[in-house]
Amino acid sequence: MYLQSDLKITSTTFLHLNINSGDIIHKKINIDTIASNLSSIQYSSDFISKLALHTQNINSPKLSNLTYTFAQISNLVHFSGLNNVTTIVLDGLRDGDVITHLFSKCLQLQHVTINMCWFTCDFKIIGAKLRHLSILHCFHTNVDDIHAFNLSSFEYRGHPEKRSIISIHAFNLSSFEYRGHPEMRSIISIEAPKLLKEFWDAEIPDSCGAKEMFDMVKDFRLVVEVVIPPKRDKIFIKWKVANERGLAVKLDNILIKGKMIFANIPRFQRGRHVKQPSSRQEKDEAMKGRGGRF
Image (tube, rainbow, N blue to C red; front, side, top):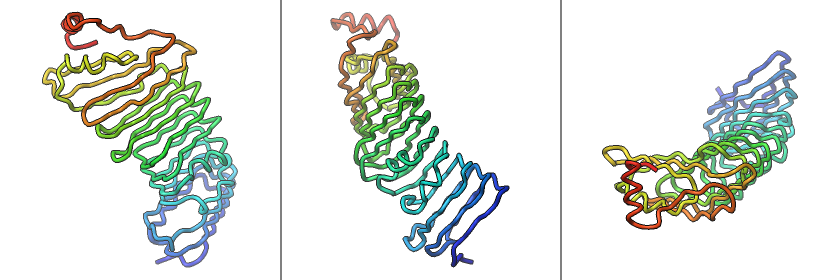
């Protein structure tokens, strides 16, 4: 059975609405939702034909949560109906600069998750009330530019076939988690004076021994901890920001190439630094004293 005409949903009692169209909505139709007490909508469709693209008009002033799984949303969902949405999950979009439009129209957004989306233009996020942001496995070719004064946590997981270029300006950011792929090159710039929590957490297979790893990371201007398991088949690296309150942290050109990690990080003008051994003998003594950890 296929829907052949416009669909109108009207209710004063609905609190949650789940629409999974599949291939039932088989032609271009309008979906109108009028529900004064509706707080959340979950919409999904795996039917990607352009003939099946249908517009959605949402008139639900109490709507605060939207989960949308489909290839397109621009010109299909009127953002004017999302004025009060605070939580949104976008999954599987292939929709140009929808993110920029979303944040310019939905000014109440606080929690945003963007998963497995495909973008071909600059990715700019300006959110005065945004507090938690997750960008997971998205394919895009340009820059992620994020300005969010009240953002407190940011999770980023890169796409295995595209490098990440991320610029973050978030005064209140305290937690940043980045997970990339060994063969993906990334450029990251962070301005977050309150960043305190560990922000890099990666397991990267490598055949390097402790001494080689120490030589490789000795120029990092960060607190670096290298944990080498007994079998030495993996090296677990943790980076922690060494900063003081009020110090803007900027990381430039974090490069992951093959199985080796390199970084070009400018020296902080203030704050603690990792003390570097000045000679080969001091390096060897430092490694013996720490048993492979520093």
